Length: 337
Image (tube, rainbow, N blue to C red):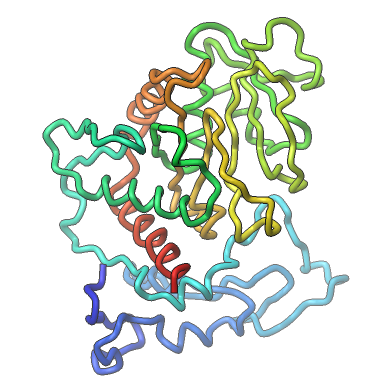
């Protein structure tokens, strides 16, 4: 990162333009794309020409031409949202910039460790202050947001590459003791279906029929409960009181919901990600709070989730975690100023 009071010039700037403060995106960036698109000037380090990516219904080299709604080129695709609604905010907070030396990341550093309330560690002889900083950033930000009850419960935190992987890990962990039917209330995110069928091909399968009429013992049901729901932004209770529930809360943040809708939650498994809170889907960074000693959710659930992630990707990269830590810290600190 950039040390306090210092600055590193970015493309389009000179050292003299920094004047001893943290860097900002150069003015040429701010004026590009007419405010109707974006471009990634960081890609220029690979020799890639930075060209404008226009928002839907704009075109031109600088996205200067607005198309009419009846134009055949004006097509808004709801299946591929433009996740850039916090771009101006982050560009206005250069303290969140992460800068890496070429040698960064030349050792293994696992990210999944103990609980929110104790000092136990599984660092296996590896000094990993980055992990501790990331966990602290997560907890501090949730305290500010007020969406998780951190005072009355202990949780294991499981970290993975995006909500997709965290949800898959939870399905895998909850279906270790026998066949499980996976359900979610309609309408739901379409990827839940493939996720359920792939996470544990031996014991987990998606219920193809009416999700409200699963026969048999509902303790053998893994239910994904999304609040607020995607795609209709409604709030729902679980379909089955005794199901094994995974609460998808990636949209459950005070900057995205009405005042008063956010209260501290204490569900057995709660999933959050950087994709929605910070418009950072390409970062691929998410986490789950797994309640300790909850009925039906013993400590081995979190451990199995961590094993699933370790066996598939080992760990999110240190660069990803460092960047996520700085973004969360910046948002938390800005809230108190």
